Length: 399
Image 1 (cartoon, rainbow, N blue to C red):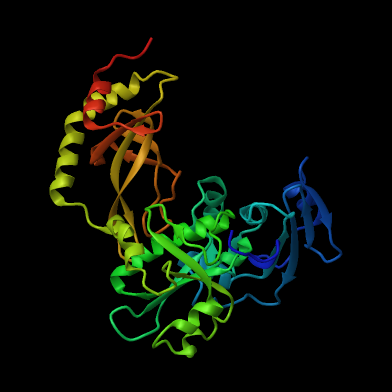
Image 2: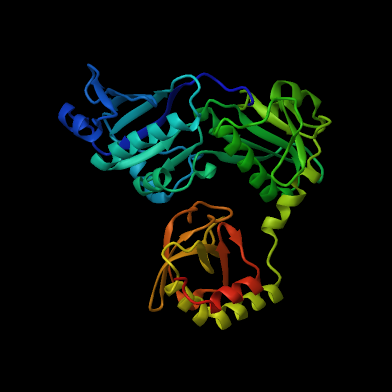
């Protein structure tokens, strides 16, 4: 695993509330005391510690004489979250410490559960100072309940760094909360940006779970392409036409992605990721929609007569509105069907939106059956081809 920092993490999370009065001792105890968690009150009002086998969370309260009144431009979040932050009168600063050998995500989620508890008793938002994000209470509820999505925890920042056709330097913010360096990659074109972000999200996920590659050791991606991590202290010296001024404010330690030979050439590395963002061929979309319309009656009927222990998964695809650049766009997402009542389908998203966290993996959604534009099935975790699916749709319910 790439070298990380100590398991003690400073106050990267801040719960900002509109109330200047801190939670009292009784309310703190009711909110957090369980069989697994003990509460230790500090002398300062509203400040306390939560101790469990997984982590120790230190909460420090600070009252503001007047509302905060402003929010940093770099903070990513909704306008409603920014407005609530501007009205903040009380700040709960959260730090955490985990035992040696703990998975890096443990402390993060213990702190997030603490933040969720605070937001259930005080109206406000959560600021992730390491990733420059501001989350509303609903965000925290989804983050703590749904499948892990690294995009909730890190921000990727593209910066023009050099002249030419591949000028972009993309780096992350937010990995410090996992006890890891942030990551960076150089010499990217605009066309490389989305594939690079997809790759870096995979890399950050591995690092967050303590499964990252060893420094200066070639490693293969999930697509079989090779790369290597080297320290930014070493890698930045070998970059041509990049001014040292570019790194002002980013003097911390990063892991730099390079080729196995140590060069800043990553076009082959990103090649498999480009296909994820290519538009589906219109003829393919039309064929899938036609198949879905033709099979829907049998698909729906077979779903309703499935066996209780039958290892079948029923999947449908439908368009969802997302806002990757502020403007509304339609993105097709797959969901596993959980219920199908008359014309309404309730399901769980198999994958989240490609460029935003508006629709998170594992989220429960409801759609109209007329919006379905593709169907698929799986058995024991294996996708069925068209011929196999046809056979299953005609099969009777197992005895």
